[in-house]
Image (cartoon, rainbow, N blue to C red):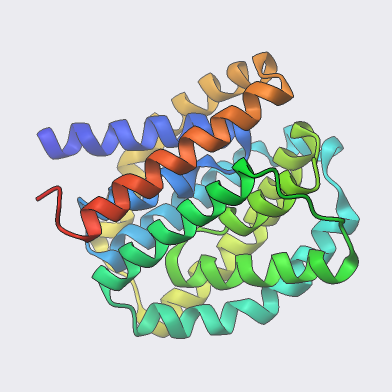
Length: 242
């Protein structure tokens, strides 16, 4: 029962963040799901639920999507996906946790130092490629997009809509690729279906919060989320929380 409550709590918080920010689910959920499930199972559960979120919201946020940018992300992701599945097949759980934590902390540091980027077609495609690689390998497409969008001072509505639309594509491709190359299991699908009611509750709460967020609070939430998740996962990967 305690494990189930923890699982539901993770899904609720992560889905609220995903709906209100456009990126929070995988960043929040994946590290903590790793504490409850094997790496392969945690990643696939994250992908399935993220796909449900994107499909549920796509019609509501369609008007804010930057379709030119979405096209470039998609092209880049198709290059990154094959490399990501190679990482997924050969993944080591301890190295995986450590690498993700360093990635998140590095990303947070860059944001805090107010790193700025000038958007170009090549950089758009590159961000999509890295995101595709991270989706099929660790189920986390958000970090490279988050860095790119924040570095280019993208408005929060456009950020949320474009990332959710991209997730709808990349999560579907990633899930299909993983099932083909590594298979799936009953636990993954049972856990995913079990979480759906909580997921939709999180979507409802997140929609309300999104309307209340201004751009400054939005960025502060990014810093807190990434810092907390990165530090927690780093400590856990080093065995300091056992």
